[in-house]
Length: 253
Image (tube, rainbow, N blue to C red; front, side):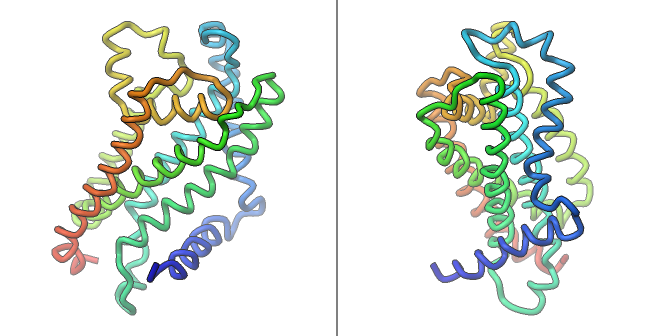
């Protein structure tokens, strides 16, 4: 791994800069999903809690969704902007530009794993047992990091070439949150709408994450296929697009 030490250094730099001027520091990784979950729990618990099948608890169901979608949203935007933000480095020394979106995704993955600490606490408080399948969340995190990296590679080109891309992506990410079952159970939707929601790749990632962490969802083999295939295709497609268009884009930094 020729650039392994560089990746390690950049990941440490990414995490350090992110919390440099924060009093709480990395504690925000723990507090942010908890505070967001609490607000949404207060708003939606009386509406959706009784709609969850079996003995599933609403609080861990909700927080798992917030944790995963926060990783995806922040990861996509940070990865897309990482090359533009590190233009000064690229102009001074040779560094493969693809490293920056990947490094940002790895940093987001570490925050995602840290965020599971308050999720575990919420599970204990609500009476939802942590599943013995818990180690499988590592696979979910890795696949999600690959998905984010691939999307980030494509968007990093677009962010540099077209300023409007940021606004469009922000709108699309907002829409994506609403078509991902973060705070509502899929069972309350009609058959046609359920099909649309299930075609959203994040739905499969979220179902597997909830199932593996606290057995708070039902998973099929289609979810596994969808998760692995979208993550691999994303990084392959993103790498190819980036390699093709980067030579035309680097002069615009």
